[in-house]
Image (tube, rainbow, N blue to C red):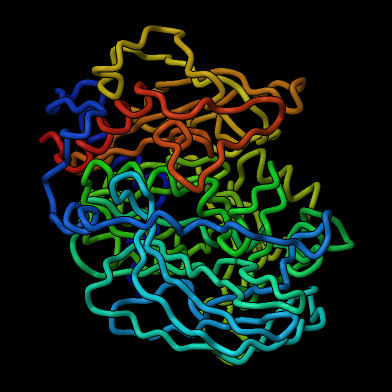
Amino acid sequence: MTKPNRSRISRRELLKSVSMTPAIGALTSTAMADDRDDVIARAGSSLIREENAKPGSRDWQLTRVRLDSRDGVRASKIEGYCSRQSVAAGESIDIMVSTDPAQAYVIEIFRTGYYGGRGARLMTKLGPFDGSVQPVPEAGDKRIRECQWTPSVTLTIPDDWPSGVYLGRLSTLTDSTGFGYWQNYVVFIVRDDRPADILLQCSDNTWQAYNQWPDRDSVYTHPKGNQGPWADVSFDRPYGMYPQIFENPQTIGSGEWLCFEYPLAYWLEKHGYDVTYCSNSDMLTPDRGLTCKTFISNGHDEYWDIRQYNSVVKLRDEGVSLLFLSGNSVCWVSPFRGSMDGRANRILFRGGPYGGEYKWAELREQQHGPFPHRGPDEGYLMGSRNVDPVNGGGDWVCALPDHWIFEGTGMKQGEAIPGLIGWEYHGDPPRDIPGLQVVGKGTALQGGVNPQAWTSTVYPGPKGNFVFNASTIWWCQDLASPPGHWIPWSHWSRPHGPDDRVQQITHNLLRRAINPVA
C-alpha cells in the first residue's frame, strides 16, 4: 500500500489539526515594537545588521534609459538576462548581454537592502567588455521567446555575499553619437541554506508571466486571448519595462522587484530582521522553508507551480508561520519545464486555476479553459481566496480592533488606511477553518465603479504558528518608500506610502511569528 504524501494535507486533516489549537485571538501579546530605528528584531543571526552597517551606494539606479519605441517595453541599446533565477555562494551564474550597436560596456553588481537609507551596496564592478548584437529569437511553439545568447561573463558568487536580491546595472561606454551610458538591469537572487527567522520569497514567476519582451510576448498577449493556457514564457530573455499600472523606467531589466517587493526588503533590513531570500523556483520542495520560522509571500505572487503549494502547506503543518503580504496570490497553477539546453525550471505557462471545486475556479475554467491542470482551493492555505473581479482599489479597513495584530496602532473599528487595497486582492474566506478571524474587510472598486468585497484574515496553525493574509499587492507600499521606488496607482486609487499603523501591524506579526506564544 502506498504511503500518503503528508505534504499534501487534505482539508479534513487541516481542520482536524487546527481544531486542536486555541483560537489565535485568545493568545497573549508578545513584546511590542514600533517603527523607531532602535527597535530591532534580535532573535536571530546578526548577519543582516552587519551587512547593512556597510556603506551603501549613492549611484545604483538607472539614470539614462531609452526604449526602442514609446509604446514598447524593450531597451535594446543594452539589455541582458541571467542563466539562473537564483544562485548560492560558491556557485556560478552566466550573464548574457546584447548591445545595439556593438559597443563597450560595464556591469556593476549591487545588493539591494537598507544601507543607511541608500538602498543598495556596490558588490563588484565587471568589465569593460566588448559588446555585440545578440539575436532576437523567432517566436516558437506557444509563442515562446527563448534566447540562446553567448554568455558575456560568468560570475562566481563570493562566499561573503549574503542572500538578497541583486541588480546588475549594465552601462554602455560609447555609442555611435559619442554619447554613452545607456543603462539597463539584470536581476538575480542569491540564496543560502542557513536557518533564519524570515524567508522572503520573491514573486519572480509572476514577473516573467507579465514580461512582454521583446514585442508583446507574455502569457497575456497570445492572439487567442489574454487568459488561456496558450503561451509559454522563458526566463532566458531580458525583462522589458513592466507593462501594467505605470510606466516606471526602474523596472527595465528588474522585473517587478523594485515596484512591488523591494520596500518590504528595505524595511526588514532597516530594522535588522534576520531575513533570507529565495525565488519561486526554490520552493519546489519544502526544505529551505523548514529551516526558517516565517515564510513571506510578497507583492504580486500570482503564479505557483503545484509543488510550491505543497511545500508551503508542509511549512504551515510543521509550525512555520505564513504571511501573505500579497494579493492575487496562488491564483494560477504554473508548471515549470526545462530550457532548450536542459536547465531546470526555466519555462512556465498558465496551466490552470487554483480553487478546486470553488466557484471562481469553475468560472475561470468556463471563461478561459479548457486548462490541463487544476489546483486545490487556495483559501484553505491563505485563509482568503482570489475573487472575480480580483482587481480594483480601496481603503484597508480595521474590522477587529481588539485583535493582537492591532496592538500599539490605536486603530478603531472601521478606521481606514487610505488606498492600501489594490490593485488586486483576496476575499470570500472559507467558513470552516477553526479559529479563522476576519481582521480587515471592505469594498474595492474595479474601474472606480464595479464593487467587490475583500477580506484580510488570520487563522492558527497546528503548532503555535499562524497564517495571515493582508489581501493586497500594495501592503509593502505603506512600509517604506526607498530610493529607486515609485508608489504605484491603479483603478483610480493609490496607496499613500509609509504609514505607522501598517508598520506596527507588520512588527506585531513578525514578533509573534519569530517568537510564537506557547
